[in-house]
Image (cartoon, rainbow, N blue to C red; front, side, top):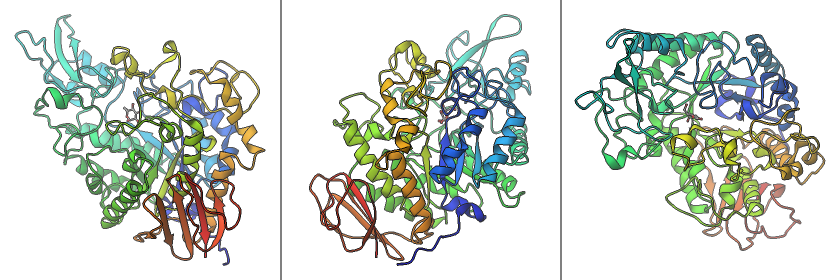
Length: 555
Ligand code: GLC
């Protein structure tokens, strides 16, 4: 067959329906200033890596001034840049330079809470109970004779009560404020029109500076039942994800009105700006309303991320997500890793499976060779599915979760708030190894903010560059082919056509003329007819496909 170079997604207004977006966790990407923390200048130096990889867009984690109590998700000023990351001018230049090489730029908006060092929260503390300043947040008197007990039993995602008591201006113990995350992240009151107006203006501020869209942090959390009902002993400690559809502070119906307002702001621009929701919902059908045509454009498919290495489970997840989102005309965004979950090489390599722990946070035996082999095959599956894909920095190098960071290095607030029992998310945030030489493997001239394992020398970009069998080259080749093969990309409304090659095999075709086969089992399987264009393991023509491997075929 002849290859037609399909239109690059970035050339059209619907680019977001099929784009491959690379998540840059700024703190750990590249440090140019030499303070051990990544920065904007570091990204600008490494844009060539992204162009060479072949992605269409980048998403940058928060870069705003912040005390960094939660890696920048505690924002003190939404219209400026954290000085350790750079300046507003550098941010604008980065956006320009990314655009010049065809990359869209998505920023990260944090609307559920501000930092406790945000001027609004300072004003709220200085003001009286019942004042307009307090009404931007969720302040309430405590329970008990002296108000000494929190207003209800909600728990914070990082551990402990979701309420903190303040001291009033006269020095007396006073009201409590809600924080669904860290104590330094007070929740905003989204029923307050002033809050809504402020965030619409913040969106415009960055859209006017060239940002192509936003990832929305905790999109499922903005609206709360302000009657503040207790959850009960058991439910209150299920953290981060709703345990039922009717939850008083996750995935409330009122949240949709906010996003309808945001969509209108996006539509003030040509081409329209776009949103991607971080929404952890109870079941896949709960994602659908966020993606109605007058709400958000896209949302991460966290069910795909949580699905085990099992052909039937993966197929069910893919079919469910595609058909649910197709009903509202939205593309699915496939994602395997991000800065909040253990890296998928490690998840796929864990040899003991606890169904209660789909993210495999618990440590246990890991076979990294197996994890990497499966990760190669799973990438080849992911990149052929209809819709868009999000990649997390370092996955193109096959980086694994670092489970054994020294305790004194841990920075995730989860560690402290869990009473030093839950290590948290630092293990997936260890900086990127760029070169096999030097003390911090090309990430920085100083000690990196989290220690990097010496064995990552073998995984450094410069090492993998020269090895055609490396993970890096698999990503490059697969991303190039994804653009070249007409059947791949958005494929709106087209469900894959599945073939039955056994319970442990995922095999499907997309028109015109493309088949992907993934063998999740151990026994080799016969490869269907067709011209092989990519394999996850070396494979001679006519040889059966071994276990934990994938192949792409044209016919
Ligand atoms: C989101 C972010 C996470 C952060 C939390 C609170 O889940 O991805 O990193 O800690 O929101 O803002």
